[in-house]
Structure formats: structure tokens, C-alpha cells
Amino acid sequence: MVIPDVIESERNAHLRGARDVCCHAPTGSGKTLAFVLPLLTALYNETPEKSGARGVRRLRALVVLPGRDLAKQVYDVFVRSAKGSHIKIGLAVGGGKKRADLVSERRSLVVGTYHETFDETRDSEGSFIRRKNGGLAESAAARSRHSFDPTSIHAALEAFDGTVRKDNGLQKVPKMGGQSAVDILVATPGRLIDHLDATPGFTLQHLRFLVIDEADRLVNQPYQNWVSRVLEASNSLNKCNVSEYVKAPLQHAPDGMTFIIDPITHRNAGSGLSVPSSIASDKDNVNSEVGLVSGLFGHPVPLRKMLFSATLTQDPQKLARLGLGNPKHYDANFLKRIGRMEETPGGTRNNNEPDAKAGTYFVPEGLTERMVECTAEQKPLVLLALLLGEENNHAHSTSTRKVDRNSVNLSIVFTSSVDSTHRLARLLQLLWEAGGFGASSAIAEFSSSINAKQRAAILRRCRSSDATKKVSVLVCSDGMSRGMDLPSVSAVINYDVPAFAKTYVHRCGRTARAGREGKAISVLKGGQVSKFQKMRSLIDGGSVKGIGVKMDLIKGVLPIYKNCVKALQRVIIAEENDELLPSEAIEAQQWI
Image (cartoon, rainbow, N blue to C red; front, side, top):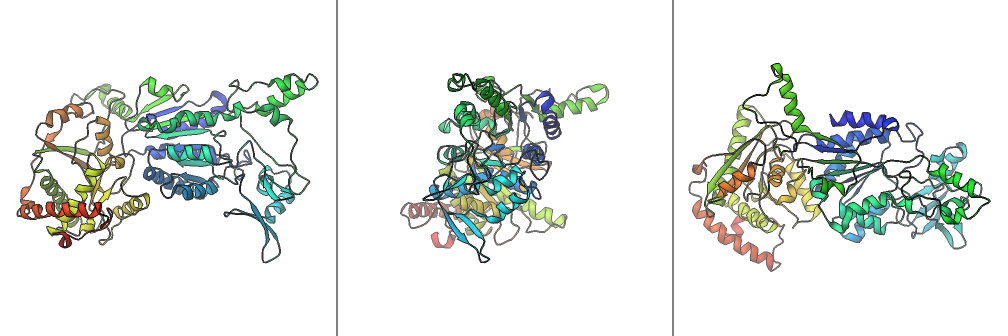
């Protein structure tokens, strides 16, 4: 319902305005497409090549996500969906050397910066080319296109972007309207603030859409007070010195015959854009000046906010800081329940189905939940038995369904901390190889302790069916629990049980995605069962049943396990002494 409703409301926004959107839907149900498709549809209809309604590229949509990996995943969806259009997608997440990454992103997001210099060169045919140090090139071909179509604002801006000739060379004149090279930006909060603070020409004043994915987490994320900074930046033009903009003479472009064009956007009427006293005091020109200001800012552009999450808060106090305008709330779980009730004869509810209540947490419909109770000492061996059981189930299904045995089959194990993730991954690597269950490389770690490039490589391996590269078990912290979409995740195992219901929901959401089946197994120590069931009662679906473990799968493994525990201590010491990198592959025979 969200996609057609948002597209239709945008089409009729000039008649009745477009409401903000809050979308609460299960993990794996397609929330990403619910904002990707409407944004691309709205902006595609505005590109110069489509309608001529907008002759200059501006940053019109901002999508904010809580982590680099999730942002990169959403960026890839935008790029694939926008293929064939003229819409440009930008990504701002950092992750490497901060200064180098910031400079690289700056060049991809902004057409030019004010402190960069330009060189004048000629190509092999003798044509004049102006090159900015750092990579952006603009040739005489752009000015030639402008000469054939002098009435095109798009051609004018492409040919003359604010660079004027001075005695000391070509210099950039700052533009009030900014100089965006992208239509849509996918970013994390921290890197977004970096660009607001340190990237000349980067502006949010033209935003039409602000999308916050995993909104319940991001709204509470205090990093540099990013929410208020973004809202303030999107309204920054309302605080500009209008008299300077109105009275400043038009600047000539380098050809001396045309003018530099600097379009700006007025956010909304009556929000701080009053006529300055410097204009009002000029009695001779006051009427004409005010008329010009009215003409400049007479068509306000609304900022439409869209919030998405599987555990979206409905707390008015938390949502108030976003300044939502008459928001429309979509609860996919609630609507699905109502739909099923309407399909039954007489519109009655199934007695076995609990009441439909908006705002309740939900897990995917295809998910089977189970729990295993054991002692703290037994947990690693119980985990091993569960993982081997999943491997056997995959082998059986491939033999009966004639599916490639090397097809992707992944189990995800969640722990409570980054340190626990690393130690458990190392132990499983040793135990997996020493027990003869496979190569240690089949066990991978995914947490903030490894850099973005290494995490990206691990995700590629998780999607690979190459027997020499594929990952069978991914051990990770809760940084992986939100949004990440991996194919064929057969099981999620909660090695450390989460304390909060919403964390449990997001963990379970890594499997049973897009209508597929999956299972979630929680490994509980004695005394944790009642606490777990109390937490689970906050989620739709009732209590979780216990299961037994096929211990015959690990018969004779105990002596090997004890040797692996001792080897783990040696591995950790080697890492602490910088003799072994935390992300470096290990061989069991070298340490046991």
C-alpha cells in the first residue's frame, strides 16, 4: 500500500499537500523498495531530460541509515533501480582514512569547491579544456552546446558553473544555491555532519524528501545532534540575507556575454523570511524589491519526511523532534490481520488468532522459533551441534530436491558484544577444522572490530556459491541485526539472548525474508528461560517451545574441544602481541 499511495500523493501534492509517512513493517518485507521506488518516480519526472521542470541538479532526497554496510546496501538498490535514468545517486559513509575519504566523497557530491584551483590546458585537437585539480573536467563542448541552445538553463549551468577569470587565474564564486552533483544522497549521520561542516557548496536547502530508515534507532542516536542539524540545514535559506541576494548585481560568466545562474529554494512561506530592514528603508525601491522577493520565494517547497522500521516507535515525544506534518502511519502487520479478518465469512476473526493491535512487534510469518536450555559450559558444544544439524538439513534438502550442494546456506550466530563475537568466531574456526567438519575459512566474523573493506569482502563471500570461498557460519554482533539482506539464511542462533524485544525482532529478521521460511533458535542458560519468555511476550506470536539437541552429531568431540579452548588462549595472546592480525586466517594444526 505504501508505494502506490506515496506516488499518488506526490502526483496530487500541488492540490492537497503530501503528508509525512511512518511505516512499520516486518523485517524482510520490502521496506527499502517502499521508499526507493517513490523517490525515483518523483525525481525522474523532474529531470531536465524528462520534463524540463528542473534545469539544474540539486540534492532533492536524503536517505539516512545507521551503519555503513546497510547504507552501502541501500545505495546499491538505488543504483540498480535508477539504471537507465538520468538520476544520480551519491554515497557518504566514510570507513577508510577519514581525510582521503572525505575529499573523495566531496568530489563526487559537489560540482566544485571554493578553495580548489583550476588549470587551463588544451587537448590533442587544440580545444580549450578547464581542469580542476582533483579530477573534474569541463570542456569548450559545454559552452558550444549552450551557444546552440541559449535559452536552456541546464546548458548554461553546465557551461558556466560560477567560475570567473581573475588576474591570478580562474576562481570560484560561492553560490547561495549550492552545487550538487547528485539528486539522491545515501548517508550515515556522522559523515553527513562532516559534509555539512566541511564541504563548501554542499547544502540541504533543496531537499524534498528526508527518509530515515531504522528510524527508531536513528531518532535516538545523539551523534552531534544530527536530527536538528539536518532540519536546520534544510531551512538554512530562510535565514539568509535576502537583501544581499536581491541587490547583488548579476555576475558575468567567463564569455562576458551571459550571466552566472544561481537558483535557490524557498522552504516554506512565513518561516523566517521577512523583508530585511535594509530593503524596507529604501522607500523608492521598497515596492519593487518586495515584489522581487515575493517572486523569488513565492513557490514554497515542502520537506516530506518518511520513517521506516520494523520496530518503529509511536511515542509522540520521540517523534516530535522531527516536526512531522500530519503523518500517515502504515502498520503492515495490523493491516494484514485486518485483511484476513475481512476475507473470512462475516468478517469474523479466527479464534486461534490473537487480536490485531497496531504497534505490536512482529516477526516474519515464515519463522519457526525454538529454544534450547543448557549450562554455560555446554553452550559452545550445543552451538556446534545446532550448526552441524543445519549443515545436515541442507545436505538432505539438496539431495532430495536435486539442488546444487554448493548452493548458499548460511547460519548466523549473534553474540552480546564485539569481544564475544571475536572469541567465539576464533573458537569455532579451530573446532570446525580440528573436528573435520570443514575448513576454518567457512567460519567468518562480522563486527565493528574489522574495517569496512574487510566486512564488504565477507558479505561477498556470504553471497558466493564457490565452495572455496563460501561462508557457512557468520558470527556477528548486533551491528548486523538491522537491515542487512543476505540470501539463503537458514537459521539465526541467539548464542547470547538479547535483553530487548526489538533487538530480538531485528536479529530474527535476518532469516525468513521475502516470504521464505527460516528458524530462530535461542540458547539459554539455566534461569534465563522465564526472562526470555517474558521478553518474547512483548512480540506477537506467543511463547517459544523448547527442543532437544542431537548430541550424537558431536560424539567424540569433547577432547578436541578442550584442546581448541587451550589453542584459543594462544591465538588471543598472539593477537595481543601483534604476532597475528585479528582478521587473519588461522589453521588448527598450527595452534593445537
